[in-house]
Amino acid sequence: MQLTHLADFPKRNKAPIPWVDKVPDFPWDDISFSTRMLREHLNQSHNLASRRQEIQNQQISWMEDAWFKPGNVKSVLDLTCGPGLIGNELARRGYKVTGIDVSPAAIGHAISVAEAEGLDVEYSRGDIREVEYGSNYDAAIMTYGLPSSFSRAELLKLLRKVNDALAPTGLAVLEFVSIPQMKHEVGRTWHTRTEGGLFGQQPYLYLRESTFHDDAAAGCQMHYIIRMDTSEVEEYSICYQGYELAEVRQLAEINGFRSVTEFGSLEGEQFTPESDWLVAILQK
Ligand SMILES: C[S@@+](CC[C@H](N)C(=O)[O-])C[C@H]1O[C@@H](n2cnc3c(N)ncnc32)[C@H](O)[C@@H]1O
Image (tube, rainbow, N blue to C red; front, side, top):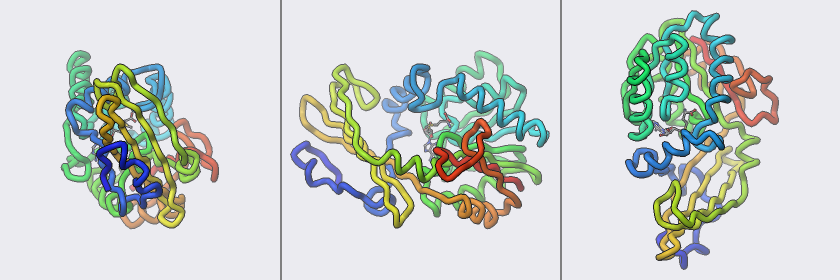
């Protein structure tokens, strides 16, 4: 049931099964939404849409020192590149970057910064499940939990596409949300935006309800936007598929990668059962 009015709110499914009761429908590709989201990406006072640039730069340095330089990486495919905060920084450091993202405003921003600085990058707008990636990249990256935001079946296909797009000795850096982080997120949170915000220019009340299904090892994040003037409700969902390390290894092997090295963060911390992130380096 898609909610339309506050009066229906108590009837909502409080524990939807990800990809069964709720499919992800966050409006990443909507022009107005993506313009507002871009502001959040660029806001350096929080890490909501993208991490702050200072943190991203540390993470880029780790990828560079630990993997790109030793692997003689020259070209990088950034899948779900957002506004190019990572891609453009990689280009400043001398890499040839290709970025793909579904958000029109994010891609527009990435391109305008790259053009202004004369960077060697190519950005295009598209859904990474659908578009072609090109070929012969030395590395591919998918950061900030994005590999977890696709269903298992989708990830399986994405890994095949990534493998096909990589050069014979290429590597992929995949940053999954860990299962413990998904469990920490379980609960409810809310805020008001009396002057509008990410979800629109008019005043609204925002409620988020996050659940985790042990059977599916997957989480569902429901976002409810309640318009203060009309009491109409919009709902958006994001789903997260959890993976144990053994399963990531299995998916990588099925898709032609010969090894997986795991870390607990994009700064190279050791992976433990409590880590918030599961960073997997897949090598062909
Ligand atoms: C949380 S942001 C992360 C951006 C960037 N990777 C980073 O680390 O800062 C998620 C990005 O994924 C993009 N995205 C989500 N689903 C996508 C899809 N199916 N295809 C392409 N881009 C997608 C969104 O538009 C958004 O820019």
